[in-house]
Length: 213
Image (cartoon, rainbow, N blue to C red; front, side, top):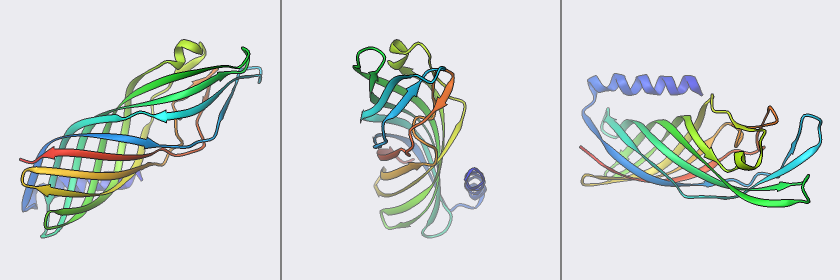
């Protein structure tokens, strides 16, 4: 999938020389996550149960950045984007070693995203899809305030996919997309020096608004 992303990036760059129409501009948007993983059991170095972790709800996230669209032939186009995003998840943490105390904890992450799409345009309507590469820049977590042996490990390039529909109305461009991740959800979590993740993939619905130049 990483090779496909590289090919799509080079395809976008190469079409700049031959493209008939080039559109670019800023874009902002919002997104929400859909995930229903099973409960995660966390043990210490001795193998004793310490916590259970559940996803309670996904908060509304936001993103902002730039897009570049090159229409190579009459209906075919390539679109490259770069945007930063903020996402938040509320977890329910149960401390089984302390009379089953339950707490709601929020974790926020900040990502840099590079979607590369190919698509077809019929009048004002666009159909497009492709790959998205994401790198987490950092985050804030309430889990650290409760669990001393918890770390957020962000050193991986995450690859996912997107598909959606869009519309161009004058200078305004609208997009509605569905996004999936190939990696297991919350694979940045490290408890007691052990990397863990929910056995599920994150799915997102994204709505964005842009302005074309």
